[in-house]
Length: 295
Image (cartoon, rainbow, N blue to C red; front, side):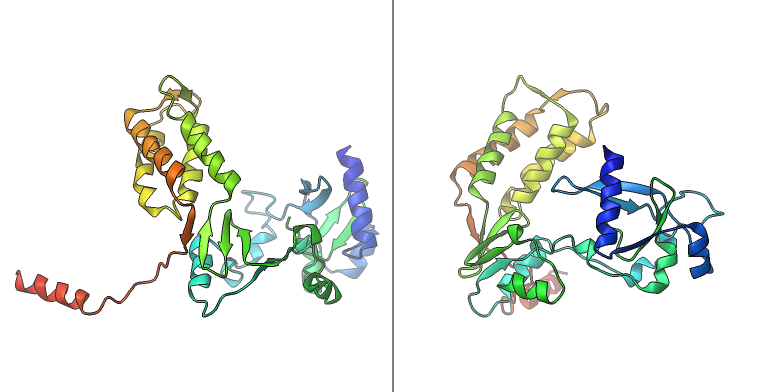
């Protein structure tokens, strides 16, 4: 079944002119003075389709054969992902209310072309030993205009302009500069914390790790509760056998009670916090003077 999907994926890529081929080894040798192929892999997309990929980090730990990726200087292609701090900073710097919308590139990794000088390093061999030139990155109203400009969008993941949009797990409001948890997410977090209040229950390391990660996410809008995550992280640090289940320590039970009480009563809409230093007049200078006088 996987082989059939991979073959169809090759046909689709060739038809879309994102791949060229099939070629024989002799044909490519006549075109390029040097070329190399990397092992073929497959990745399942969110829609269930299968796409072939190059494993450009193969072979590993072989000093005689350098990786294709080893020719790339990572510092020349730094990529950052928007986190809570960056998004909050964007809203805090706004001078007026804004409407928000989301636009999603359809298979962006297959729309970004590579330079022809890179093609000899991006050769793919199919299941029948045929060779293909992969010309795209091997990663894994406005929408209409973007399509005309050559950027295909996923209309199902696009949303119209409105005051609120969900992004990185929170719902942001561009008119009032607020952020909140989605209702379903809030109920889910309460239910997860409630389970950890059962004293006779035992938990796996993975369950504790998942809870800590999710509560750490919520702590972006409830920073006063970040101190009540220490018990979870201490518990995980002291976990000797990761496959053995354990009951929650008293410290964790007490911390989870605090989380449970707050999640049940707090207004889950918050003004977007500012992480930048605030000038509060001469207070900082007076503090320095007082420190000098005390010496």
